[in-house]
Image (cartoon, rainbow, N blue to C red):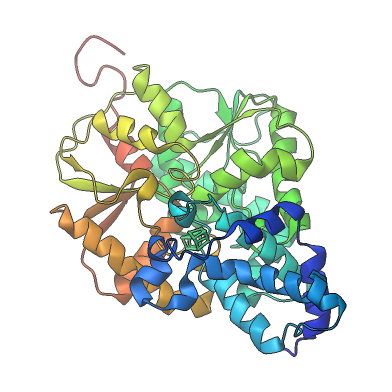
Length: 424
Ligand code: SF4
Ligand code: SF4
């Protein structure tokens, strides 16, 4: 953040964005500090500035200085440019909006939602990391944060269909399921897109991609840009309505799921006209009802719960139900499920170049958790976690392996009566 800041103007904008329930959170905080050790940024640095409660302070201080009775008599100090810079790092670079602190807080204070609101306030005041803002603007102008335009998506799908001999319907007139993608997968992990298609086809699903609404990530939400957040939700909703989809399946991306599933209707301003399922929820249903069968996978593996799918998404058991069906040596890491440690790159932190060193420090937690299970094979269901961990794995020279859950499933699929049990 090198540009000059008008701290007084920024402070006013921040205050104008401060919603009443957030003031309630600020006043409820007991300053007990219990949340500190729940946060991976504090855990790996020991720096008290990363205590989650501290992230309340941008709004709390601005509020006290501008609106409290003392401020009426001019007895409070104004917010300074230095403080704004310090807060920017706290609410953008060092909060993945993972929600782990809220599970520990005796007052149930939802720091992640406060950070989301504070980001909106900062963005409205013209502040915030430029690369995160650019990712949001790319989504608005080109369809996706990584430049996956509709034309590029169609090219890529055609190429993948040919190379992997897997049918991938695009722009069908009608379909029960609209399958979305994350541009991280399309640009970095295209095997995941093939894996989703193989699973859908094996299940006999009536599905389609749409070139009108395909990008499930929502950097408008992460960057604090509500106009872009709404545009991204609207594209998918309109595409789903056009094909009459009853279900929208979100790929291996945690925050894409969280935004559409829990905030989509509020962002849109009306109920979503379809059910939203993360791909692990969709596959788990197929496994539970016997539609999908997999050959045994015998290597020792452990599982990283993406925060927005498990802790904040509630779909913790689905990955277990999938793995129980075929991973014969599955080992839970500790802590796991709703208490799992974040990868360090959620909440848009992955897109902030200046946060890379801090992210890599956080990944040491994941290395330790993985190795404590006696394996170096780490499975997960979020392409953003995967990219974060891939980068940190290289930076820390870790020789472990990161595996996508849906790719693991697709590789193990039993197609037709391949297993010779008489069932197709
Ligand atoms: S939401 Fe996660 S990253 Fe943010 S303060 Fe809480 S524990 Fe830390
Ligand atoms: S645990 Fe909750 S009440 Fe205690 S300091 Fe943290 S946010 Fe405040």
